Length: 444
Image (cartoon, rainbow, N blue to C red; front, top):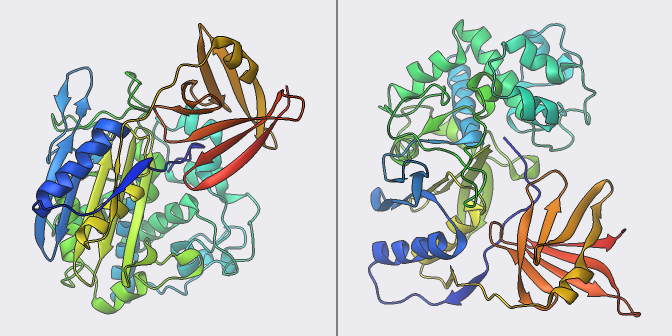
């Protein structure tokens, strides 16, 4: 549901598989992510219907000093979308709607609704503006309940980004509209339909929507980073709705994984529709990829205080579920390392980072403003002998030296290299993060 500027990539050491049982190897790998990279959450890894690892790492709640375990309940953000798409496909199978239906059939006054199909909404090819890009809404309004019409009004009259069906652009708004369509067709609230058609039949007894009102002792507290002691804002379920409101446990989500092999929720034909890539390699609530010659279907989720990821390889029934309540790392990277381990490939394991002492005279030369993109500036300051960086309106982070001119923040896996010009003065910085390299010229 949310976007962050700092992406994540694992600073790691390639190692070969060692002679340990698979569950022990998995625990060794994930413990290293916890110890060296700040991963904090719960992981489930299964293959061929057998659970190989199901374990919590770090704190469920910092203040209470309670630990994550297999029963911890997390918000899963956009993983919600695959559940919404399943309800749409159920209704299609029952002849209650068609994927070619136009949005105008359900919201007659929706602008350009006669050119937007249900399938366009499922595949993010609608051109409908993404409402979570509305910063005032997400920062100051998201924690309070909102009625459905008011939520849709945030994006209803925004111009389409492109002609429907011609491009891919991820839009939470599209899935809000799908939730609305489910309510119109079923005559019931989306939340109730989800319980009746999926959570109940699969005995997902620890799954729901109103995370703010959840009183369970298993509930995780979300934090914006491992260094923060302040709980993150909790987005109200009426705001995230059919795009990202579900909370669950790794065990409940694994029940969902297993059910997808049985036809209990949707038919095999519908499942293959959901797993067929369209533009952007996106199907119906799932992303498509190929790893080691096998098809992979996956999806991540992000909502304040939480990151989540589900990685499935149908061919060998691999399922990797990663939940995080102090999100700083891309769980997709962790899933890739876990999958490499399972396939007997070389994988990576985080290592301790080196910290070098740099004279404050040199550190002072790095202080300044660097433009990463038009209107997006990173400010570097020297405060009490510490080099600090702040990107846009995000929290200020301390930078630690790996080399005299190369630094990293402990909270986020990224590297900043300061580059001098011909006259010896610092003229730019290079940000290396998530496999992406950005150059920012010094503007002050």
